[in-house]
Amino acid sequence: MALRPSPSLAWLPTLKAAQLKALATATGLPSSGTKPTLIARLLASLPISKLYHPDGASNANDTPLRILSIDMGIRNLAYCQIALTPTWPAFKQPMLSALPVVEAWDRIAVAPRPISTVSELPGTAPVKEPFDPSTYAPYALSLLSSVILSARPSPPTTILIERQRFRSMGSFSVQEWTLRVNMFEAMLHAVLHTLRARGIWAGYVYAVEPGRVQAFWLGNEEGNSGKAERARAVKEPRKAKQGKEEKVRLVGRWVEEGGVVALEGRAEETGMGFVRKGRGGIGKKDDLADCLVQGMAWVRWEENRRRIIREGVRFLEGLG
Image 1 (cartoon, rainbow, N blue to C red):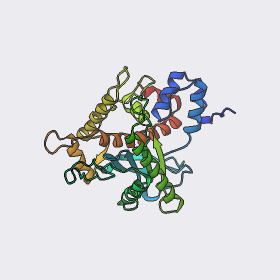
Image 2 (image 1 turned 90 degrees about the vertical axis):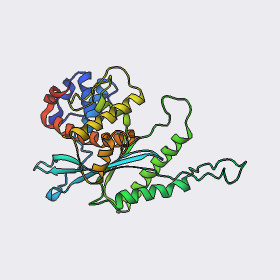
Image 3 (image 1 turned 180 degrees about the vertical axis):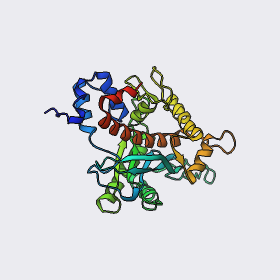
Image 4 (image 1 turned 90 degrees about the horizontal axis):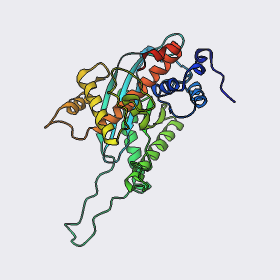
């Protein structure tokens, strides 16, 4: 049965397919499908917040809400924690005040490299790194215990985990390293579900498709969000390397020019290393960039969702 539009969204069926796709991209939804599919998707998603509690429960004294954004990896898992200060109006739709503050921003190795014994025992094969569940399960618990249970000043209220692909670059084969990261991703979700079910942690977890994050900030052939602060969009399909380079440049501008996020504490040190060239600069930046653009995309998707509810069709006027 088709969803009946709420009074605030009754204008959606009057839009063209391209406009519906633009709204989907602006709020982090899939932008593919027919016009009826897009309308149904927007009607089901726009009334529901994925940043604040769906029932609109108040958050007294402007206590910051915190987003932990994770870019998956084994050797290079990157994460950042973004604090948001909400203002809670009477109609229980929280509005953000001030810039989002990045409190933590780092890259870590989840598993240590195996120590090779080739030099000690000539003729023996190199030590193969294990990636069985019994080896990686403690890594998952240790990681989440350190970044959630020990988080200061308070644990994250929303956790975003980059959704992994089973194949890379359209390859028919599935690489062993891909299986490792996919397994570890599943373990993180399992641990978080357990912490929440046992009442140890009270936040929400979401899997985030990297393609929707890139479509939002960099644009693609299905439409882009049109904001001036976003990276310059191009029409031709992007290769993975090009997308990574553009996201690194985008985050570099955020750090150098300001006005999008504020960096505090250790995150400020990471930012200085991110933009510093040569000695003292961070070498591999794409993972750090990915976790930050993912977290900030979630913030903007929520802001756009509320603007669409409030402004209606006028929201489209601000899109390029």
